[in-house]
Length: 280
Image (tube, rainbow, N blue to C red; front, side, top):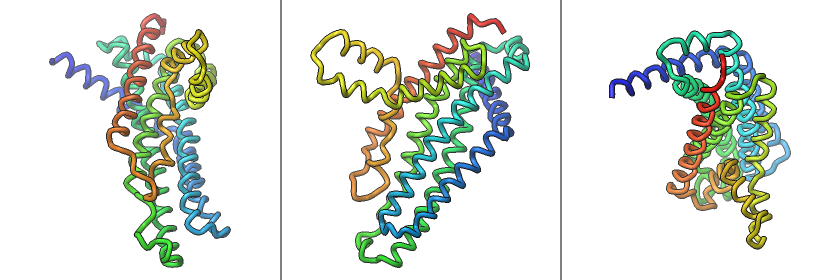
């Protein structure tokens, strides 16, 4: 028990230092400001008078910005934080202490994941504030469209943010796995983005082969579907936020979170297997 407590303490220390290092990077601050500005600029389209459709547009615009910039940040930050330790030889100093390589990787992941929590929270708070402001303006101007109250379930913004944060966690773990056997920062970033595309679009192949008869092709698609996480499961924005649709069941949310956790842990453990064989 005391060994586990010491291990958790070491992981927490590495995660805290990684988070502070990430926050100090200009890339994070610049990307956060750009993302906030882009989400805020969605109100520009109010001049086209979409009516209540403006709320749906702003919501989709904000969700898209979160996914796009969040994916860039999770890959770039994880890769940079890992290779900075390798290139500066500080990883050698850290691992010379009584610290296991799994603890080192877990600390790096948690630091990057905490960074993504800050990023996701800020974007969702900005988006929620803009939506609340615009909805209040529309309620005063178009009261007949809001006879049943507000159209937006703001608690669902938190649920959507949680699911996106979990997806960014899987993506960070994938980037860490690739970095564990890669020799360059660029290679890791490029391959991670290819993995993102595969994970985002793999459901298309699964749907296409679902109508096929049993055969090698269908089994291959199933195997690939297990290897690569299906990011489409996290894209539940259309089922959330607006009260006309039924809210996403809590069981479904927990299942998606569990799905993300399984792949996150799996990729970190695979990264540890590669990192064990790596000379630093």
